Length: 288
Length: 316
Image (cartoon, rainbow over all chains, first blue to last red; front, side, top):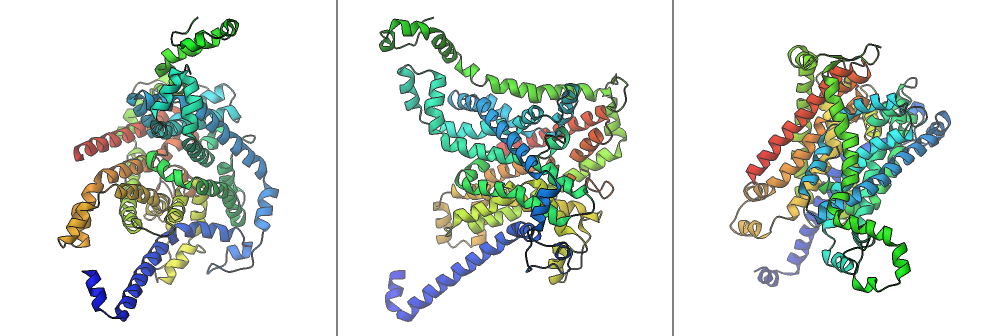
């Protein structure tokens, strides 16, 4: 049908059709950009504000084009021990993630291989419970043992973020590992632990990398545990940046610079694992 | 000592080596026989230690009159905390309604916008991966940091939001200091963070919808709206239920954003159950009462997810 019309119509019709096609795709992409814009604007505003002087910060109408300054960033590093907060954040989130893998991978493997669906449900339920209900008992226990403001207390509590999430995501990745290979290895005398470490884990390594990064991000972002259980020594970045608010009057330059510094690694990591992130988010939606 | 599943080829191997490795092997063999129990055991023990034990402790605390600040020992009072909570405490009932209002406002908007965005993106677009990644950034970025940026943008006198609204001839708003606007304003932050989440899940759901019914409907002359309403939405309903379930559970528990932006204020206008429980525990050190509050929040979350899961089963 369309073949016919094309032959009957002159060359002008062809050009017109491709014009219309171009126009639809221009409208389509314009719509996509229009939809993305509000979601990106908050980041843009954070980024812009972090390069403004105090005067530009409070200017009204707000300025979009100005001569940028790096002073806010210098100030962040000079006024507070920002680097040691960042080190604390790294220590806590990486340790909680590594421990989460050590505890979580065998459990995920077991749930995937032996169809332990009741255990899977228990993991899911554990992610629905609001954290506030653990926080109070933990706080009392950790104070009783003098463990408030120590790394072990923070890392243990962050395991609540990392381990169930790792298990939940890795079940799906382990289910994708073909059992034939594992059976062959078992017949050759490999132990189950060997099968997990030498066959299943390497084959599921993209999943391990993706869920580890996702979980590092969630641990990095956590605010409520550190707010109560961290102190001067172990304070992590989200609490530190919140502290900026109460330091004198609002120092928006410092706040936006610190916010940019905290968020930047997360955004970079999100780009690194973008492909797996979509699957991971769809699987493990509940961030608890 | 000798592992039952040791293959013959191995048994023929060097005898001394075998003896030295005997202990390790018998351990591994034991692991193999009990693997289905041993593999998940460490994780389960950790869950018991970190979650079940605190929850039991929480129940214990909720049955006691207990102020952390005073030296007095906890005193058993039975269900008094719960009775007070449900029968007398207006702050509690108010905070429940606020939590529902916040959750409904945020999740309903997220579902509608998320569906619209998913339908827009559900086609072959150049750079679709980069588009999706950009969409994921709001939910990955540190909520505390983002909440502070929103405080800056909401500023009534010099904030950029009032400026942008001014361009549309909308009068400036008080946002976070307006009693009636504070919850929608906080919900807007949640909408900003999680509409892309809904959109991405629905996009994954749209990808599984078969093409044939859509095409035959189009050939039969159905309008795009009819196709959407009578074919796409019914097929997408299970996915929409999942997305809504995830969002409702999470939104009920929102803490970081509200705590950073308003601390439950102005007055108590944005004090949700989570905030109320936190402040009862860590501002007033009223431990027994806070435990009763957080147990109520757990029950609420489980009740709502139970209802939704049953509802979903019926829909399927």
